Each structure stands twice: as structure tokens, then as C-alpha cells.
Length: 193
Image: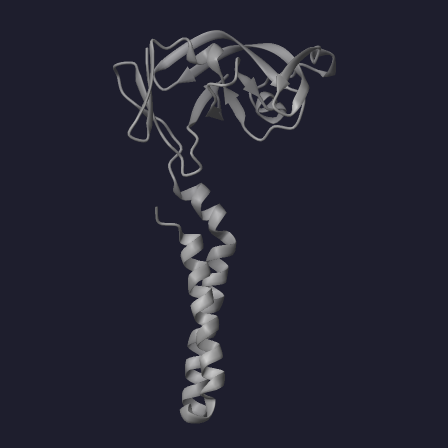
């Protein structure tokens, strides 16, 4: 797969080698040619380092993480370059991005996503516990009034708000089991209801 970041680092290495060569052969080039070639190589080096530094931001904004829906009740999710499948669901009229996690038992929202969707369990709401790869974490059981995934709409979906640190909400098996078929093929996760 083409990786702009590694290409940028390679260009930076080539530009650095070019500057070294210019330094070695500076007497043969003359002052004008040396200045012109040095300026071109420095511009290439700075550009390559800049692209390399911002590559993760470019990648996150450039690649499509949105599902492809069709009217037959089928949802197709493209695999992200990081290897995961992401889906944006509308929770109480607010778009929330989830990572599809077949290893998660339930739908789990980050505190931030829950608050944006108008769900605030309060500190007393974190009375249940979940076991994760990083140990136990406090959770707050909730019910999502409205969940929209493409043309599919569900009401009163049980979920949890994670009391610990979590970067992306999880779309776990309690929701995925609502689909008749889950298939992974050709870089796509296809859900059929």
C-alpha cells in the first residue's frame, strides 16, 4: 500500500544526501549553481518533512470512514487504513462515530459522545463494571432513545457509558446481533438486516 509518510521520509533522506553531495562538490559547481541547487534541495527537504509531520491529520481527513448504505437493509463499511471498520450512527439526532468491535459485548459510548447525544448518567450512574484488556472500568448503563444507522432505525437501544478513558465509542455485539448477517470480504464489512 502507498504510504505518503514513508515516501516523505525517503524524500527527506534523499534531500539530505543531496545537500551532503553539494557540500562535497561545492568547488566544482561554482557559487551560483551551488546556491541554486542548495535552495532546491532545502525546499524539497522542508516540504517532505512538513508532509511527514502532518500525515496522520491528512490521512484521517482524506480516507472515507462513512458507511455505504443501500435500500435493501444492507450496510457496507470500508476497512480503514488502520485495519478497523468505522460507522457513524445518529444517536438522538447527533452523529457519533463508532469503531465496530465484535469483541465488545455491548454498545459503549465515551463520556464525550454520550454528553453530545444528550445522555448524562451523572456520577452516581457509574455503578456497573466492565472487564477490559486494561482491567476493570466503571460503566453507566443507559438506554438510547433513538439510533439511526443509514435507513435502519431502532428505538430504546441498551448501551453503556464508559467511566474510563476511551477514544472512540464501540459498536458491540448487543447492537450487531440485530443484523441477520455479518460478513467481511474484500476489505468491506457488510451488515444485512
